[in-house]
Image (cartoon, rainbow over all chains, first blue to last red; front, side, top):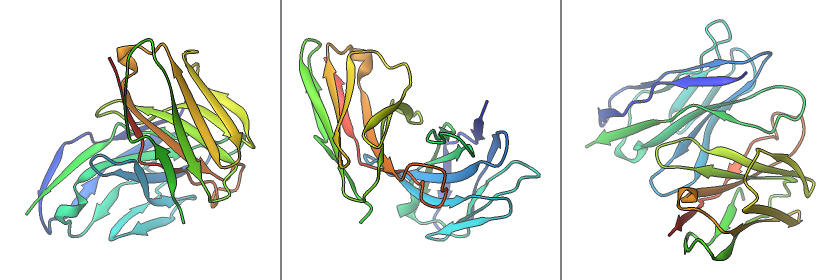
Length: 114
Length: 116
């Protein structure tokens, strides 16, 4: 079956530090890959997505590249801010058929200190 | 506008109460979802409606009863819940079907439910 494995954290960084949150997946075919962010007390917001191999998703300074050879979709940001403190979820949706279901990783709590 | 609105934001109920959670979107999406999220866990899919018809039920207990009265609204009726049902309940919507570029789920802020 499909699965997503991401570093569980928590991750604590100082402001302006470089961020990497690792995400690897197991799926048949060519799934779509997503990063969602959940700020304290809120629902999930789509941060970025990629739908095919070598696609790079980017938004708000965050980037992730769909690497089929390593089945990975690592999230990176060059300089984090206190406002980036949140839980980050990597997710996939399989291709084909009734592809409604998102498979989520366990989430990574990021805390950025001033 | 990519907003999914959920009401109420917080709900406290006893195990014998009947209550309903509401979700509304005006993005023209024809697929709507209910998720349950426990603390420090990822969301778990409960139900999916596609074109106002129940498409997926992830073996959810019958004390949770979904309803999709029209393409913009989604309800979750609650009855005889247990304390372990306390969680954040998230609604999401998307376009249905295969087109990946459109089939992105947008989430509401959730209803935080406490069952006493």
